[in-house]
Image 1 (cartoon, helix red, strand yellow):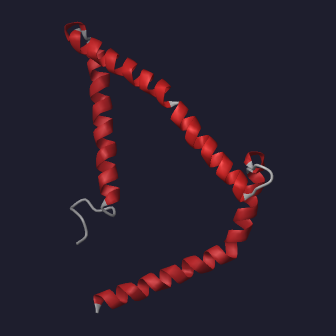
Image 2: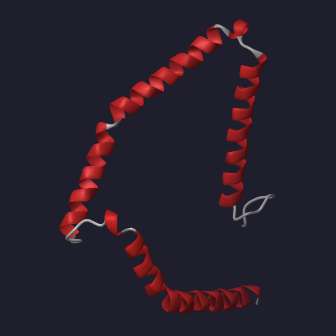
Image 3: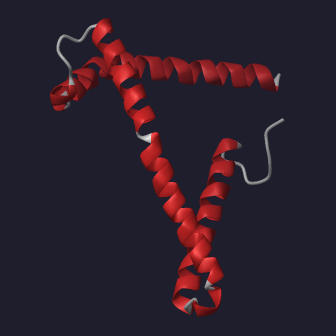
Length: 124
């Protein structure tokens, strides 16, 4: 019985959302295109989209060596800091600790969102 009522509630929400999109969607679409017309490639064809997607892919692929080099520099910096940890200032250690705590907090927030905004566990 509870599943049937949830299904009816979901259908009602989906209908409301569909009506909202049908009413406001075209206006939003026109405004969005007008605001971003400087990004639109002419002519807007499938071929042009395929070309742009290939350009993006290969541009990202070409950027890998630079990213790898930057990553190696970061790793070397961390290794250097670890070797000279006796000379580490309290301020630097505090900043590193705060950064670690922030990373952990974002991880926890992502887990909570992934579970459907529950703190106790997954819906089974």
